[in-house]
Structures are given as structure tokens and as C-alpha cells.
Amino acid sequence: MKAFLTIAFLYIITFIFAFTSNAVAPENLNKKNVIVLNAYHQNYHWADEIMRGIFTVFDDKKKVELFVEYMDTKRCSDSVYYEQLANIYKHKYNNVAIDAIIACDDNALNFLLKYRQEVFPDIPVSFNGIVDYSNTRLQGQKGYTGVHESFDLPANIRLIKKLHPKVKEIVFVSDLTESGKALIARMNRAVPQFENQLKFTYLINEDLEVVKSKISSLSDSSIIIWAIYMRLPNGQFMSSNESIYIIKETSQRPVYCIWDVVGQGVIGGKISPPFYQGYGAANKARQILAGISPDSISIDDTPILFKFDYNELKKFNIRESDLPEGSAIINKPFSFWAEYKLMIIGVFFAFAFLIALVFMLFYLYRKSKKDEVVILKRNQELKQISETLKQTNEHLQFAKYKAEESDRLKSAFLANISHEIRTPMNGILGFSSLLQMGGLDHEDELNYLQLIEKSGQRMVSLLNDLVDMAKIESGTLTLHKSTFNIKDLLKDIKDFYTPEAKEKNLELIVELNHESKDDTITTDKSKVEQVLVNLVKNGLKFSPGGHVKISYKNSPDTVTFFVEDTGIGIPEDELTIIFERFRQSYYSKDNTQQGIGLGLAISKEFVELMGGELKVVSKENEGSTFWFSVLKY
Ligand code: ADP
View (spheres, rainbow, N blue to C red):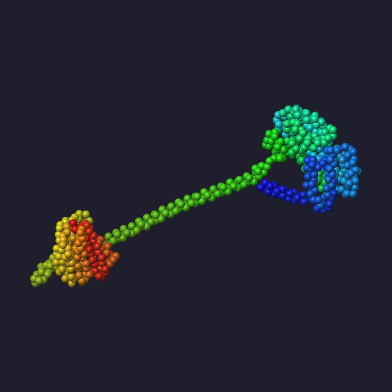
């Protein structure tokens, strides 16, 4: 992941850089020849970084040919050497048309100031890495431009004071190279403003042993500034790495720098990165190649910045938060958090948002589920209410029907009863008047008297029915048990109703059970008789011809009586209602028969009181069979 992101980052930077450098490139630049005169040598960090800056600007070899010359003056810098270098360059570039020279560091500039006209006559120069630049240095010279190295020594001293509040002494180590001299000069200018606060000790151009012995005994309140200490008084040269290593081996005190040797064992400081030296000088060389006169190109400062080594900061417990804002820190271990802080925060918020979204959706889902349950429950409740209302409605309809029925029955009852009273009454009154008028023969008189008696009996029967019904209604109906013989009872009924049957051309049959030896039962005889008579009378009443037959069946506990007729029958849907009070079969209505619809209702009550039940089977136009059982004891 890290590798991928790094490659992607480099790609983008390279692309942007390539784009911008192309953008500023003069379009009609023919291939130019530029000599880079580097005062030092390869693998010297400072010199390498300057070269990186130059290569960054001149990245297109088709347009510019760079001739790089390392003068190696750290190792050798006497006048003979320079003289010989001048001869070599003169010889080497005699036939090369040089368009510009980039001079890196003081020794290169000084060389050109002395030999340019002889070796590279009138070739414009862009310089860099000039430590202590002043205008006087180029006085009377033409064809020079460039950048100089910026320094801010007071800022470095203030930084040391801030990071090491207990500091009392600053030990300044330098050689007497051109760079060293320039740095000493700058230090001398900076010191006065701190003189009352700090002691400054200078180890200038000292032998290595002297330096070592002095710094080995430094107190805890001393800090070292490694200015530049690469050439020893005996002319021996050390690399910056070697020099810093020796110092750190000798002293445990923190070492700061004032130019870019960060990464070689120093804590750091406010420095001028060599990259910008090379980059700045190369850009000015481009302007020269584009035809601009070097004398009209300004000589500028280069950026300076705070740069530190993470390992050294850790070693001396210096917190990053105490460093100046915008400080660059090298050797810092890769921190995923530090590197991708914004991305992590973005991803975190995106996740938080998604999680919140998921929770919200879950909440809404749960709520909708709950609502669904509530709605279902409400629905069920409504269904129940609707069902209850439906039932109530049905009950009301039924009650209404019952009320109407009751009203209709009441009217029918009143009409019937008035008919049932008026008919025999008229008979009694009519025949009584005829008898009173006299002049009748004896047979007629007898006939009329019989009719009057029949009418009276009919009225008595009606009254008896009403009294029985009243008793049933009031719950005062009781049994008067006696032991009697069934056969005797049935014979009596046959004898009594045969004449009436004959009158209607009907045969009244009584089927006695001759095999039965004991036909005596103990129950309410008058009620058994009343039920039988009622059934026989109905059979006679509703049978236009044929017969009415009475039979019975004995069983150990009960006796069952059957009354069968060959009459008009009863429709199936009326087989139940005929047992209700004042109800008469619709079918029998056409027959203008007597009755008010109480006989079967009273009979049913009597039978049930005697421990039995009253039933009927019937077929229209064929006849009916009523039967009822009673307990024998
Ligand atoms: P009533 O005979 O006084 O009308 P019941 O209660 O005895 O009253 O009979 C009720 C009704 O039952 C009768 O009006 C008649 O419609 C029907 N019914 C009873 N017995 C018979 C029968 N044997 N054949 C046909 N219909 C009958």
C-alpha cells in the first residue's frame, strides 16, 4: 500500500514538474553547451545536491549539453593547482562553443574571476553557493549573475536557546576554507546581540586533537555549532561526515549546523538547502541561454528553512511540537497516521457517516416493522369490531324479525282467538234461538242441542288450552301421576273419536300391542290423554281422507306413542316451528281449519315434563307421523 502510494505520488510530482518545466522552456532553444564548474567533488553531499538542482532544470539533453567539471578544491586548492586547471580547461574547451557557465561555490567563482577571460572569454556566468556574498566581489566585472547562499545565524542561536533553555555556551567549530571564513564572518556579525546571554567559544582552524580535547570536556550547558570543519591546519581534508562523526564520538553534547549537513549526525538548524543553489543558478543560466544579458538578471537569495534529523531530536528528547512551524524532518520513521492523516480522517468520517446511515436505516426499518405490527393489530381489532358489529347487526335484525314476528303472531293470535270464540258462540247463540222459536221436530231439536254442546266443548277446549299455556308460562305446571293401562286409554280415545272420523270419511285405527303383557304405566294420565287427543284431532283435521292410526311401543323405561295420518303433510322447513306457540304451518293455512296454534306447543311441554320428547316426520300430500315418549314410572 505504502509503496503503491509513494509511486503514485512520485508519478504525479514528476508529471507536474515535467509540465511546469516544459511550460517555461523557450521554444526555439537550439542545443546549447553549458559548463558546470563545481568547486568540489562527487559524493560530497553539498555538491551532489547542487548538481541535483541543476539537473532538475536541465532535464532535456536534446536541448542542453552539460559539461560537468568537479574541481575537487576541498582536497587541493593551491594556486599551482588552479593554474593547471585553467590550462586543462583552456585546452579541453578550445573548440567547444560554450554558451554559459554555472559556477558552484566560492572556489569556482574565484577561479572564474581570475581565469575566465583567459579560459572562457566573455562566456556569461551564473554562480551559486556563495557563502558571504557582497556586491564588491563582482566590482568591475561583466557577465555575472546567480544566487548566493542565505544564512540566518541569529535564528539558529535563538533556536538553540529555545530548545535548550539551560544553554550557557556555544562552541563554534570551523576551518579556514573560503566557506569557513565566510561563516566566521557571519557568526561575528550575529554574536553581539547574544553576548550578554551566552558565552561564545571559537575553535577555528584548530588541530583535530585540540578540537577533540576541548569538546570532550564540555559542560552540560554547552552546545556545539559545526560551521564547517573539513580542512585541517596541515591541509588534510576530511569529509563533512567524517568530521561530524569525530566530533560526536568525542562529545555527547548536541551539535547544530548552519548549512545542510543534516542527516550526518547533527540535530539540524536553519539552513540553505544546496538543491536550491543549483536550481536557482541553473534557472538563471536558462535565462542567459534564452538571450537575456546576465548583467540584467538580478542576483538573488535562496530559500532557507529549518531542517532537522529525527534520530538526533529523539536522542536529545527534543519534541517536534517545540520546533518552528514548517520545519522539515528527515529520517522520520514512516507513520501511516502522519502520512495519510487527512485520508484517514476522511475515511473515518465517511465510515461514521455510513454507520450512522446504516443505523438510521435500521431504525427506520425497525420502526416500519413496529408500525406494521401496530397496523396489523389495529386491522385485526377493526376486523373484530366489524365482526362484532356484523353480529350485533344480525342480532338486531333477528330481534327486529322476532319483534315483527311476535307482532304478527299477536295479531294472528287475536284474529284466531276471536274466530275460535265467535264460531262456537255463534253456534250456541244461533241454535239456542232456533230452539226458542219452537216448532221443531224432536230430531232437529236433538241435533241442535248436540251442536250447541259441541260448540260449548270447543270453547271449553280453547279455554283449557289457554289455561294450560298460562300455567306453562307461570311455571306452575305439575304432574298428577296415576297408574293406568295404555290399552284402556287408547280404546277410550278410539271410541270417542270414531264418530268424528266417520263424519269425515276417515278411519280411526288403534293398533294395540297384543304381545305386550304389562301395558300399565305410572304417569299423568290426563296429560298423556291430552297429547294423544291433540295429535288425533290434528290428524283428523288435516287429513281429507284415509286414516288416522294410533299405536305404541313399550320399552323397559319408556312407552312411545305414534299417531300416523294420511293427511296434507307438513313442509320440511316448517317441521320445527309448528312446535312453537301460536305457530301454524303455512301449508295448512289454506285449509280453513280450526285452532290457534297452541296444541303442539302445550303437548311438547307436557311430554318433556313427563321425561320424554315429541317428534314428527312428514311428507307433503302423503301424511305425517307424530310420536312421543314418556317415562313409564
Ligand atoms: P292448531 O291445530 O290449533 O292450529 P297445533 O299446535 O295443534 O295448533 O298445530 C299447529 C299447526 O301444525 C297446525 O295449525 C297445522 O298447521 C300443523 N299440524 C299439526 N298437526 C298436523 C297434521 N297431522 N297434519 C298436517 N298439519 C298439522
